Length: 286
Image (cartoon, rainbow, N blue to C red; front, side):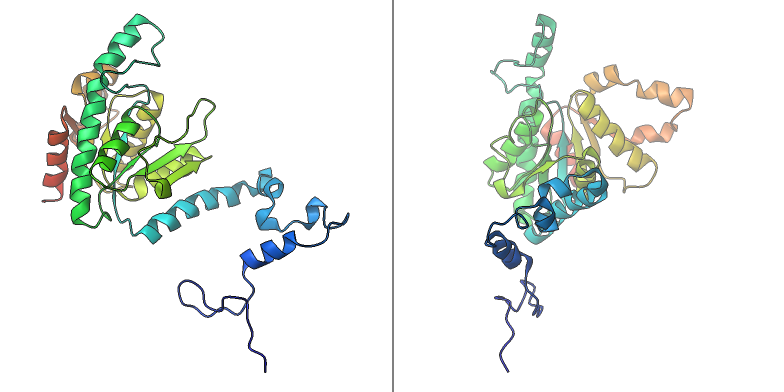
């Protein structure tokens, strides 16, 4: 009896699989002679048909794919935990122009805020150095992959030889991923909701720097999950106490009764990278 073959009888996980694999059939389908029938969109294999995959009815499948793709790659890389860094894309590196400023007031504020770029960079270095002790499987720095504080986070980790994750999202004004994201860990999203899940699914700590609507959204999403006990009480660290207390009157929320007084204890205010890392170290008793 002839030996059955699909060109690769065992999968990567060692499981025997005598069926033809999808890559082989994708290649063979492309080699079919061109006829009116084979050129019809209906003839395309469903899983490589972009027009089909982008139909409105396929939204549940696309949501699942965005969740699954990143999860599979991180699992294959052996990444067990992350330190997430949120913060403004418009905050410049010290000595660089405040490119996003629309007036002189904004320019002065953003230039002064460049101190947070440097602290984010230092903080990410500390995370990367500690990650090395764990073969870069724990405390892997994760950002939104863009400029500003995100760039500083990826940069600091990369400077100490640590892999670093970037979770970009398609926006009308969005740029390419910053050059410090590890290429194999650079991801792109269509759905904000799935991107947020990946920010938090492995998070051992969250560091939040001054930022705009996106940063506020990420902050409130995180603190709500912790407050409602849908997420473990991990360190939630806010860089720049003056900024945060000016933007959000946390005590007023507690005084009014819309949050519990104890909820204020979920927040840790710091000014420096060393202070932030000490909070993490103390929390996990390093």
